[in-house]
Amino acid sequence: ALKLSPAELRVWLALASFCYDTDTCWPSHAAMIADRLPPGTTASTIRKAKRGLEKKGLLVTEQRHTGSGRETSHRYRIMAPVQTDPEGRPNRPPPPSVSTPPEQDKGIGKSKRRRKGTHAVIEEMIGELT
Image 1 (cartoon, helix red, strand yellow):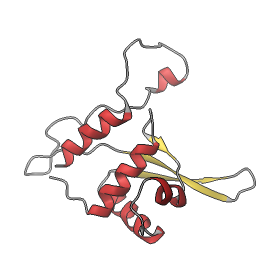
Image 2: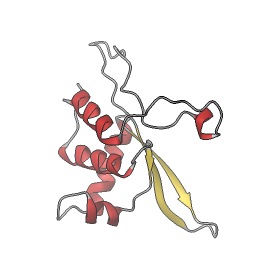
Image 3: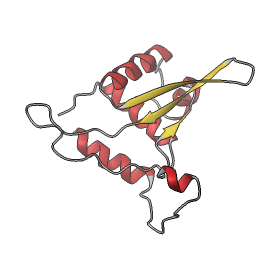
Image 4: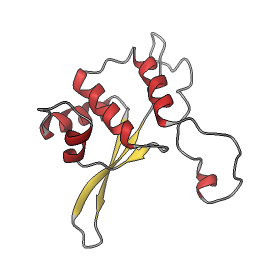
């Protein structure tokens, strides 16, 4: 099973809660601390947890810049955990993503299939981690 530190789990869940109906978000550390993380959480704790999540394949971080070149909040892509067998091979597919397939983003081939809400997917992912 995938082992996460308490801080990694809290940061992963906080980021996921900002994603709404997609698998990407771009909250600042200040927004995460103010709205989603326990009092006393520091920016260095968030940075360390994000590095751990990236190493474990649960987070992809993309730097963003304003039109003038100034750095702004990063874009985060939340990844679903994948269970593995004792040799480290995936033994079943990850939970479905909440993001829209690229062809639907372009308005091509719109599907009537209803996507799962973010909270339902987060609950599935927590089940995968425990």
